[in-house]
Image (cartoon, rainbow, N blue to C red; front, side, top):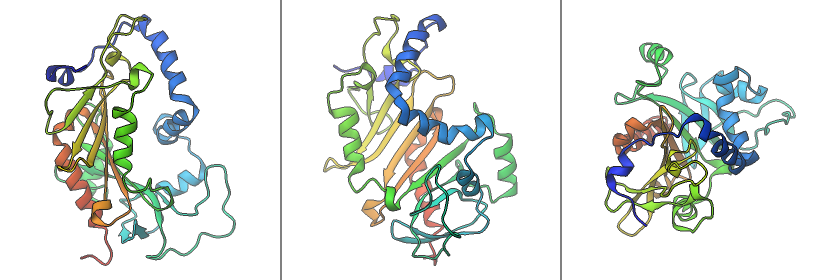
Length: 285
C-alpha cells in the first residue's frame, strides 16, 4: 500500500478530545516502562525543575570537557556542553565510589548535548545567542538540540540500517508501527507514513498523538545515511534526526531535534551539526 506525496506534507488533524482517550490509553501501554522513563529523563527538568543529582552535576560542567568521542580527541567549552557522561560514570540511582577520575584525551565520552541556532550555528557561549535562546518561543524558535552518543553505549556500526529494517521494512503488528511508502521522494528523502483508519475513533491512525512520519536517505549501495522521525498530530510537531559518523572512522551517533517546520533544512542541519562537533576536535586540525 502507498500513500500520496500530498498526504505526507499535510499535518494530521487530531480527532475530537473525547475520541482521544482510548487511543491515549492504548498508546501509553505501547510505550511501556522503558520509553516512559526515557522521556521523563530528558523532559523532567523543564517540566518540574527536578533532576537526579548525577544529572544535575552533568548539566553544567564546571570546566571544559576533555576526552574522546568515538576515538576523536575533543575539548568542549564548558558553556557549550550539557549533560556530559563518560564511560564508567554511575548510572541513575548509583553513587560514585571515590572522586571523579582526572579526564584526559583517553577518557571515553559516552554522551553529551549542545544547542545550536540555525542557520548561523551560534551556541550558548555567545551572550546574544544565549539571550535569544532564553526568549525563544516554541512556534518560532530556530534552536536545535544536538546529541552525541559514543563510548560504551554506541549502538555499533550499521545501526541506521538495523533501525530502518526494524521500524519500516519488517512487518510489525501494531497499526502505529506499520508504514507505507510515498511514491516519490519528499525533500530528497524516502518517506513513509502510517495508512489506515482507527476503527475505535474513526480517525486516521496518523492523527494519533503517538504517530510519526519517517524519512530515510540512502547511498547508491543501499546503505542508510539519515533516519528522521517526525511527529504528525502535535500542535508544534518535532523531528528526531539521526546519523552516523562511522564512515568518517568515528564510532559515534549524532542526533538533532528540531521543529518539523525545519525539516526542509535537514541536509544543512546534518552537515552543520557535524561540522560544529569537529570544531571541538583537539588539537584542532
